[in-house]
Image 1 (cartoon, helix red, strand yellow):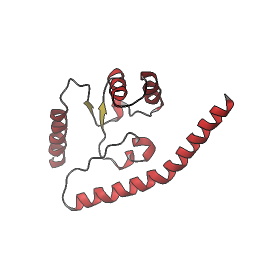
Image 2 (cartoon, rainbow, N blue to C red; image 1 turned 90 degrees about the vertical axis):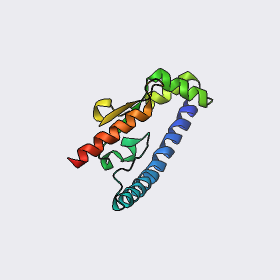
Image 3 (cartoon, rainbow, N blue to C red; image 1 turned 60 degrees about the vertical axis):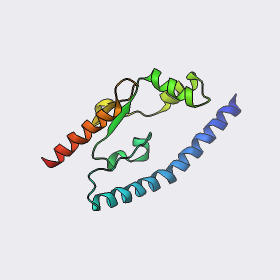
Image 4 (spheres, helix red, strand yellow; image 1 turned 30 degrees about the vertical axis):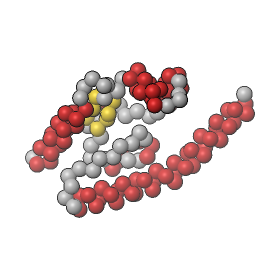
Length: 133
């Protein structure tokens, strides 16, 4: 009823408040870490995040590599490792802000069929080659 909706609204507001504290701190920490790597001559700094846009990390990235899997595969994986139902997982997926494949520099397919490592190695090689040019 109305009390349940009010409770959900209160939780959502608390999460927004936490995000306004956590996201800038994480962004600053990643900036320091990536700067330290660059000063040591490291050509790459990889950051994994499910909240790329919301966290403000997108504007720090030279490239965005999207790891993508078909929705049924994603649902199956989450159900196997959690106590969530397929319907709950689908609701969470629909609530997420997803980077459109066209907005990513590259898309890595994680469907359980295409091997991941060759895809990542190829992207590293392409990026390294482009940096040299």
